[in-house]
Length: 84
Image 1 (cartoon, rainbow, N blue to C red):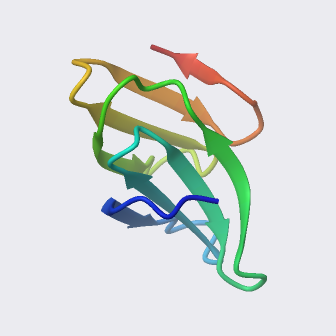
Image 2 (image 1 turned 45 degrees about the vertical axis):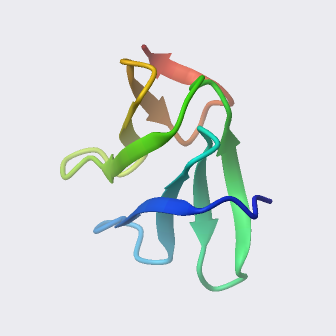
């Protein structure tokens, strides 16, 4: 995984062992804190990702916002953005 500077972290309130992170390279990760491994990696943003947050209603959904002026909605069951 990345060695880039982190910009944001978000705990999944439903799946307690998952956190999401975003970084200055434009990557969004979902991590399993029990195994300390990345379970998903999304590289669709073209610039630094400032914000990432899990849905409070649907545990598999998260959103990210970037300096590329795009907001992307991700589903942890898919390898690419669900909506962008």
